[in-house]
Amino acid sequence: MLKIREVLLAKIETTYGIDPGLTGAANAILVENLAWSHEGARMYERNPIKSSMAPLKPVFGGTLKAISFEVEIKGSGTADVPPELGVLLRGCRFAEATNAGVSVVYAPASGANASLTLHYYQDGVLHVLTGARGKVTFNCETGAPGKASFNFTGHTKMRGTAVSATSTTIVLPSTFSATDDVYNGRTLRITAGIGLGQSKSIADYTGATKTCTVTTWTTTPDSTSIFEIDNGPIDTALATPTYSAIVPVPLIAVPFSVDSYAAVISKLAFDVGLNLVTPPDISSPDGFGELQIIGRKLTGSFDPEAVLVATHDFHGKWKAGNAMALDTGQIGTTAGNRYRIQMPGISYTGVGKGDRDGITVYETPFMAAETGTDNEVSLTFS
Image (cartoon, helix red, strand yellow):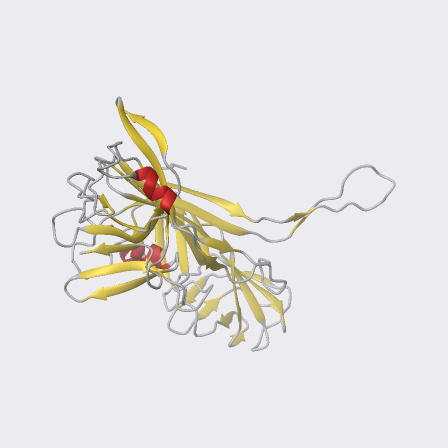
C-alpha cells in the first residue's frame, strides 16, 4: 500500500454514532501527516490456577479508533461559506456562526457538541469512525501557512434495532444513511432478539428504503432483533475526492499584537486543551459509550523579541496577572480567503530567555480565559 494514496472524508452526523453516508465529491478534506491507531483497546488476560504453566488465550474486550492529521488554515473562497476545516472544528466543540455576506466565525462552545463520521481510505482499505469527537491545536509560523492539528476518536461499530426483515434482507432504522451502497462489504451481526448470533456480510444497501441485502438467514430476524454493523476495516476502492482549490496564505505581513503592543514574533502556537473522555458502556457493541468533551483550558506560547520594560513590561504583566487581548490581525488580503485569530483575555504564565538568530527573545507561555461567555478564542474567516 502506498502512503501517498490516502483519502479522508468527514461529515456531521444527524444521529450520534450513525454513519450518514459520505462521498468524495462532498466530504473530502485535504490533510497532511495522516495516521490511525487503536484507542483504549482492552485485552483481558486470563490467569486461572491449573496444572500447566502455559497461559490461556486473552479475550478481546473492545476498542475505539483514533485518527490524527494536519489541515491548512484557509478560507472557502466565499466570505460567508464555511471553510474546509469548519466541519472538523465543529467536531471539537466549536460553534459556527455565519454573518451573511461577511464572515464565518468559530468559537468554543459549552452547549451541544456535534459528532462526526470519518472515512479513512488507505489505498484499498477503508477505516470508518462513527460518533467521533476530537481535540485541536494550532501552529502559525512565519512564511508558512497556518496549520490546525486534529486528533479524533470514534467508535468501530454502529448499533440499532431492525425495522423488519425477510429471508435475505434486513431493514435498518430511519436514522441510517440514505446513500446507496454505503454499508456494502461491512459485517452485520444480530446481538439480541430473534436471530441472535448470526453474522452476515452486507452485499447491497438501498438508501431510500434502508434495506440491507444479505445471504439467506438461518433464522429470519424481526423488529425485536438488535444488530450491530462493524465499521471495518474492509477492502474497497479508494474514494475519488474533490478538494477545495483555495491556496492557503503564508504568515507574512501579519499585524500581530498583544495588549495593543506590536510584538515581533516568529511563531504563535496554542492548544484549545479539550478534555475528551471515553466512558465505558457494558451495553455498547465496542464497550464504550458516547464520547464526550467535558472541559477545556486553552494554553499557548509565542516568542517576542526582548524590548525595554518601558516598551512592554513582559515580566511585570506576568507577575501582575494582567488580562490582555491577543490579536493576529487579518491574515490574507483576498476576500473569501482571509482569517483572524483573537483572544480577548490572555495572561502570561511565565517569561523565559531565548535566542533567535542572535537576537534575544522571550519564550512566553500564556493561558486564555473568557471575558464573556465561551469567547476565549475566535477564528473569523472572511
